[in-house]
Image (cartoon, rainbow, N blue to C red; front, side, top):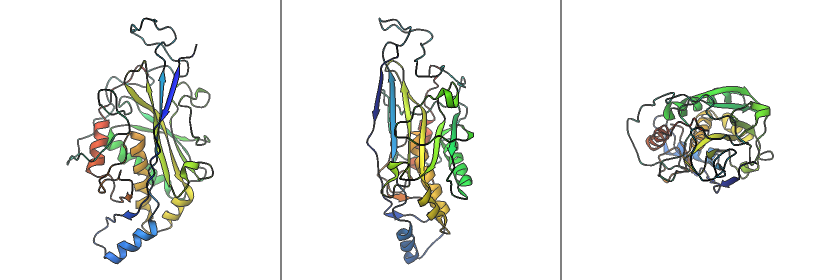
Length: 297
């Protein structure tokens, strides 16, 4: 019989960019104010987490709760340990300056943050049917920056026709084979993705998985970007930096970072930071790199 499956979802986080920090040299106050008005309202973090916890008694597992050397495979999960190495695939350097302005979306019972296994690559696909011109390079840069800070090795599996949905299945063997579904990055609209309503330009989050109420790890995720709003930003001479900030902000949510109250950080919900990841963001991503390897899932 299928293991009991429990799902939970944290409340959505919505943010409004009421002010923007401009990082190119010294600008006159009046110019900065104009920029704030032009792009106000475009950066919105809206992380989503879904947690999947198979029941205590998996198929073939003793009913007395004793552990097995080889955990049984849940019927709604792929064979465990796909592409899992014996050690992390990268060792990101610690930030030159540490900062405690970071927050995690989820933690384990021992207080450690929930993250992706650093011992396997994170595959991703992009539904780019409506991607704005010039967005591919920005997305590649955002992924490279987050990868360097977190140690997670991203692998581009190309394009997909998969559409964003409210509750995405993390295991889709008919589409992606016997592995966890790759991270889905979608260019879309509020009509297709209602979470993008009310000027929300992007949403991002991941699904976490646990066996027998043990440690949780992220296994896949999704990130949605509002094509019309991003296109409008890219039409502005300085808009590319703000789009890059949006992408990195949402990838921060995918990795496991929550909003913070420090306006200097990229993960602050109301300020776009075209100068990129700040010390608190980098500290949080570096701590996520110490998540455990998971050959059991």
